[in-house]
Length: 431
Image (cartoon, rainbow, N blue to C red; front, side, top):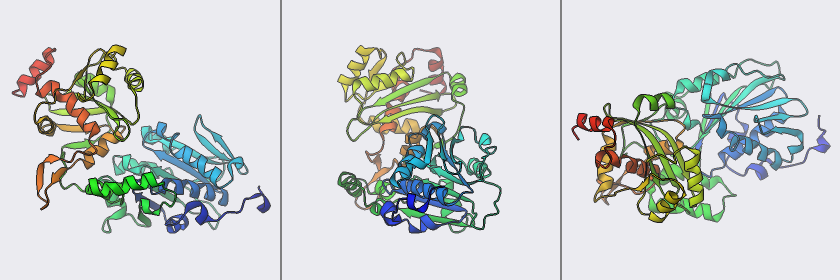
């Protein structure tokens, strides 16, 4: 074990800043933090876990995200950063390929898993001590409480140490008041027993740079409803939502594509502030269902990047309907080999018509499409000065939705009738 002299001296407040003292010391079974972006909740959790692993030799930590491949660039990186910030990196072995982190003096583990197959998580064992703690990062991405409870079952057993405690920590950005997390941990009548739940905001982050701080504060002016979520960490409200007909649901992508046999793709362009997006869906016209199964959402993409992304998704030969406000990018992509990419029509009042078309379907969003789910939960109609709802959405946070509208033009604008299946579907819908 490392001696006291070998351990660097540091102040907790110097490392975590203000606003997280209750979180840091809490030992209730559920420790839940929802908050705005930039509120340092994930960084604080990472520092806290590194500190606690070293303090309690019986402890091991399981870190969960909805999909295992997202851990490496988020929670694993945060915990590695936390060890460095505390001056303890040399005491940990970082296995990036798994990923896995081992506290060298004792052999305690920090394990990383995804909910790709939640049943496998319940059988995890450790060699030293007890699997006593669970950190669920971006908990909002877990679709159902049943899926979450399956993971909680992995935290079991006891230890003779007098300071032993088990704990489930959840960190997330809130998007909708309809999510099960609100009822389970924040509503007084239905919340779980032995729960500590709190909300944090970017105001607590002393280390946020001026550019990010100004960007958050400007959102209060440009989109107050979205600012309540992004800046204040409040729940998104259902009132005024453009779409009420969607559901985040786990489904077999390949089976769905094979069953529906009708896929479509749309693309929207951005660069500095707005992302370039692409969205893919299976469209079941006879049953009026849209199954969104893939997305891309990234800023700063040049044409070569966009081409590489399309190629990696196997869409070079697919029909892609793209934003017609950037004809140069469309032509460059076509010359590179995206042969069937074409401009969206964008007729007069096309946004309203496109929205009405989508509102006529039941829309299922695969949980891997996190930006799609976020947009559907925050895309709202505008209001006049008296607070009356207008028949026009706020032009914010809709880059996936715009791409989805473009992809649907071939159906409701009657631009593509190249298959018998589509012909028959049109007739069945009276189009």
